[in-house]
Length: 143
Image (cartoon, rainbow, N blue to C red):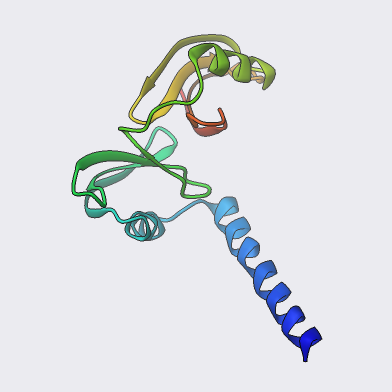
């Protein structure tokens, strides 16, 4: 019986990442973005739009404040505009340089995400949005 329960628990754990992997492959739909916001206590979600490589919306936070949020289209991570960045401008420049981006400029923190313009490793001009905690690229908008 213990083996059966252990196998059942492991199967349940294994099933969750498969759903996340599928979402990461195709990106969040508008419906899934709305669901993710609701799961995290956001209400009165308005003007949900996909622009600049991320989902954006106006909403009310769980504490009733009016906020603007961005969502990572791959994993649904939410970035409220009132969030404080954990990384500095230098950290973002170093992260992008290590990832092969050149000519990094116009680095600033707005709307809960770091933003930068650069040339990608293929030589194309891009606008990037980066996670304020770990520098992960959240959205890419090609010029």
